[in-house]
Image 1 (cartoon, rainbow, N blue to C red):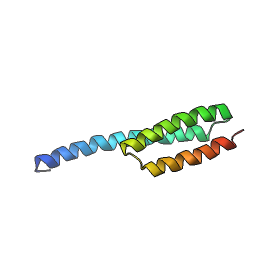
Image 2 (cartoon, helix red, strand yellow):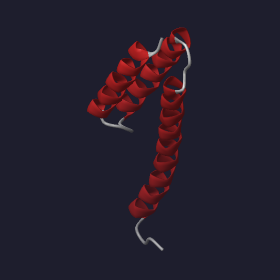
Image 3 (spheres, helix red, strand yellow):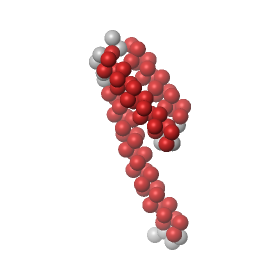
Length: 84
């Protein structure tokens, strides 16, 4: 058991932040998968726009690094351009 009040508060905050980050990362994975599995170009482009928003928001909140978000967006953009 934690003895200091500040350590107890930090433990509570860590649990909340970890849960929030897990939810955001799951949302990222799901949206990336939707773009990857898109059959036609129109669907892929709409899903790509939504995924871009999710990635930018996660990077702004510090859940993932800004450069990781940029790398994922770049990879998805290449994929969307290949879809016919």
